[in-house]
Image (cartoon, rainbow, N blue to C red; front, side, top):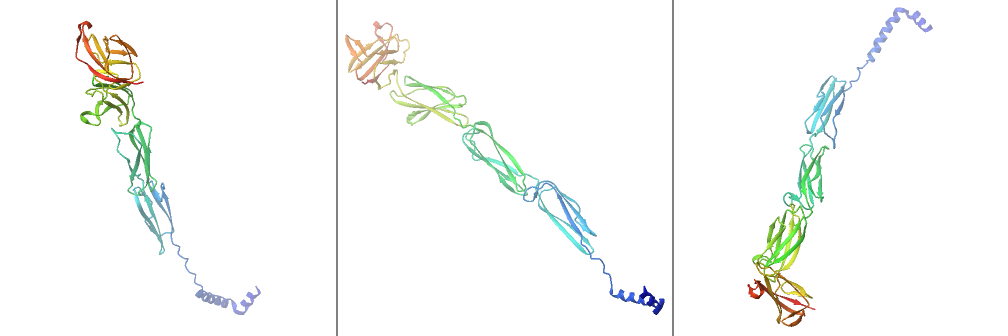
Length: 373
């Protein structure tokens, strides 16, 4: 305060004012206030959509930009992508006072699941049926992100006319498609049982029983027809078959096979020795004791004459039926005979009318049998 009074007395009010104006002018020459520094625009982005795998989106994608401090901008409007694309680049650019900011995003969009196909390891075994284990492979195509993986599966049962195997394929975006492979499966063979043979005159009646799933029955015979080693002598749906034209004394094997729709097979085999009119014992049969001799009945025959020879005739009998029980001992022509070891041949003739009339037909046939101890 005292200093200001001293200046005022020394220079006067007017001089002090002049000197202050001059000082301000001098100071203003050196103190220039600069403009505020320019700030570039700021850009932020918001992406909405269902994010899948490997950076892929699986639904419509909306890209929204938030720009702060711009004078001008381009490409910064909100955009929604609805079409699959392996990579769509979207750029937002903003400027302010000569400064520019740019920001880009790349959107990979795959909303489409793979197309899937399926194939079995082999065609059906028979009539659209599989009868043993199979494998099923699934394959796919995907136009945008590509297929990442496909499954495979196997089937070994159970039997099922409406079996299915399910699988799928997935793409790199995480979309997947499932598919089922339908098929018919039967690995169980049908059943053939109660196979019986009945001999006839150079013939054999073969009968059988079968399970309900048996579609067809096939009978093979060995030896076969016309010199073949084996022949199919019957094929059909019946439960019996008469085979004729057999050679007397020859051994035959019959294999009765049941086949179902899936071509599963089961088999039963029987063996026999063909006979002629004399049915039993079989030609050349080996006996260890008494036996019943059987032959085919002859129409209108009243009786039969049976003769047995062992070196010489040892028996002659006239049974009324086509069968005779040979015992261990018997009497013939005043002599006593015993069924001893050796080879016997027997003959049969049909007789008509009264026995005393001795009216006989043709010899039915003759066979041999062997008696052992």
